[in-house]
Image (cartoon, rainbow over all chains, first blue to last red; front, side):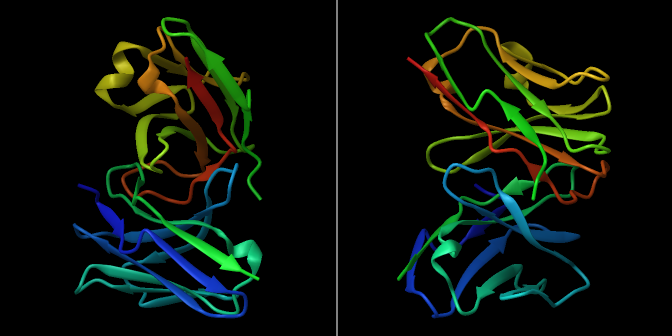
Length: 109
Length: 116
């Protein structure tokens, strides 16, 4: 089983709508990262949120971390077609990142 | 935007053939990772280096996979005898920091290996 797992396989929204991707993890962590992978590209980090942070923002993106429930969320407001991608949460305390299986987000015009 | 460069973009090999791919990490990044991503989006960590030294590697890597990061040359990952199950996207990533806590990884676009 995965160290970190997103809670949905796929989501579809229309441009301009907001969407939230959720992630749960199985052990205590020092930080959790969100990555986005567009078709034909490698993953790119969106946000790194540390265990002493409850919320972090990056433009239209907002990540939350709840260490008591071992969960995190990534919200995207005012979605655009170019937000279409696979979104991964990832964490690791042993020198390497362990990725979830990803949530595919489709933003339709 | 990541400046990790991976070559080739696509690699097609027959079973039993060698497959070699290369990676130039971001300038100034001493830590390099190799991951295998399958068609179901699952990531498998293969190996990581700090400068030229191996930090961690999985058992599978020790048998048919070999990797190196020589000084002043691209890092490389080589599969000695390719198998159909090796077909995947191989991702190289670099980082400013090593250590126990996993920090930001900067990924290349990957090498898509197809083993026929």
